[in-house]
Each structure stands twice: as structure tokens, then as C-alpha cells.
Amino acid sequence: MAASAEPLLPETEAVRWRPRMDERRLALYARAWTATTLAHVLPFVLTAIVLVLIEPWLAPMSLLALVQAWIIPELYANRGAKVVRPKRRAGEEAERTALGLLGDLVDHDARELHARTGLVLERGRFGTWLVGEAGALLVRERHTHCFCVRVDHPDLPSADRISHLLLALRADEQGFATVANQAFAGARWRVRRRIPKPMRPALDAAVR
Image 1 (spheres, rainbow, N blue to C red):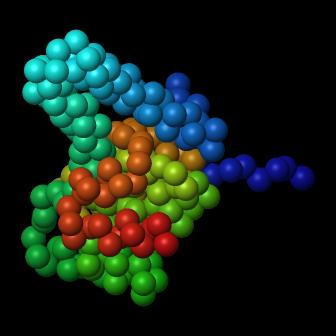
Image 2 (image 1 turned 180 degrees about the vertical axis):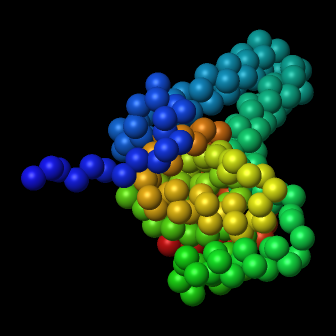
């Protein structure tokens, strides 16, 4: 009897050079983002300390170095948060129709959360996903991963784009995470600060 094959997204053929995403690779991505951030931040922190030790009157310069050390991770987090920011909307009638189709795919709680935040909560093997129009956040125990992934038909209504991504995620979570591009992986609080305020309750719900 033939073994049942794991479902694969057709889109994975376009990125055959990428290994399939798994728990180990997700952890590696998170550590790589942390290392990259530290490599940018630590030189500015050390510079600030050295300047003050050399000459106390250089404190303003030290402060500027510390500000730079703070800004760099914020810019990374802002880049990650962009994956779920709202995009251009289609006509009202098309949006209403698409919203009804999306509502058929999720339960009452997910519909209510989407109505308030524009994001759909979906529990997966890797963690809890928040699916938007052009990307998704993956909330894990210590990090939040920001994935940028587009639907091939950008003129679709917002809810249709979310439905496409949600169905792809359900069909092959590993493939979805493989095809998508990681824009950021880091502390949840950094991402929360950078996503639009109406979307923050969705991130809080994913944590719960």
C-alpha cells in the first residue's frame, strides 16, 4: 500500500532551492535575526560607553549613539510589521462579497476578530498565525515571525486575498512558511509597537 504523501503547495516549485521550513529552521531564523540586530546595536552602545569614559563632556555624542542603537531594531520591526498593514481596497460591493466567503472559512471568534482588526487568527503546528492581505505573523513562545507573501492577483478584494493565504496555510503550513519571505523575527513587543493600533488586539489574542 502506497504511503500517503504530505500535501505540497504548487508555489514551492518556484523556490525549490529553499529547504522545507521546520521547527529547527524557524529557531535558526530567530537566532539569526537576533545576531544581526546585536551586530548593529552593540557597536553603538560600546561607542557611547567609550565616549563618556574618555571625556564626560562627550555625553551628548554618547546619547546620539544610544539613540541610533535604539532606532535600528525599531526599523527592523517596522519592516516586519508592514507585511500585515492594510492594502488598497477594491469596490465596496466586491469587498462585501469576499467578506462573506471568508466568513464561511472561519468560526465566529475569528470572524469577530477579523472585523475588529483585519487579521484572521489560525492555529498551526508552528504556532499561532495572524493572516493579513499580503503576509502573516507567526506568534511563537519567544518570537514573532513576520512573513511577506503575496497573492498572484493583487486586484482581488482584501478578504479574497486573506482567504487565498488562509487556504494555502491550511493546505501546507510548512510550504507556506517556505514560500513566504521572512521580513523580521524578534521580540513580540517590538512588532506590537509597529503594527497599526487597531490590529494590536489580534496579536494579544494570538498570545493568549
